[in-house]
Every structure is written in structure tokens, then in C-alpha cells.
Length: 136
Image (tube, rainbow, N blue to C red; front, top):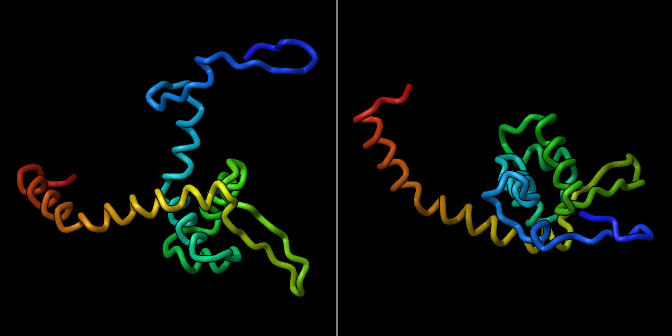
């Protein structure tokens, strides 16, 4: 980016064009954030409805408190999730999808559905490969 005076910033066309195959591509990191195991599941759960932290933790079996907290912080920072502190008694925090998060989720759900539909083929492929080359 170049400073073009009075605080304005001009981006070159090269900087604006996303290419996830390039190391410097800024969308690569965001893509990694939304497709991480716990982030993907958290976004999918939030598609159902807003959730409190404990509800999300119970919904996503196997996630540690630390990993869920890190995933939610990253998703909030990237603008996919909104964190709201409720001043109810007792106070609690609720997470919900932002407008961008809601637009993203159908694509993630399609990916999940695609993989789930093909699990019989995945299991067959694993068995065939494991027969020739046993897993370590």
C-alpha cells in the first residue's frame, strides 16, 4: 500500500487481487480461519441460533474450552461472529453470526454435506489404501 497524502491509502491492483496460492495473499489466512475444524463447527452451530459459550461447548463434542475460545476470538476478529455481553442476571456472553458470517455459512454447510454424503466412498478408499500401505 502507498500513502497518497492526508492519511488516505491507495492499494495497488496487485494488492487487491486475491490469489490463495500466493504466500502473501490475505484471504489465505481468513480461509484457514473459517475452515479450521473447530471454527467450521462453531460457525455451523451458530447457523442454528445464537449460543452462549457453554452451549457451544456442549454442542461441539470434543472441543476444549481453550480451543473454542481461541476459535471464537479469531472468528470475531475476522468479522464472521459477533460477541455480545448480556447484562442479565447472571451476566453472560452470547455469540451470533454477523451478516457476513450468515452469508458464509451456507457454503460451509454445503461442504460438510458434500463430505458426509461421500463418507462410504472415503471409508472404502481408506480401506483399499490401508490394505496396500498400512497406516503408521
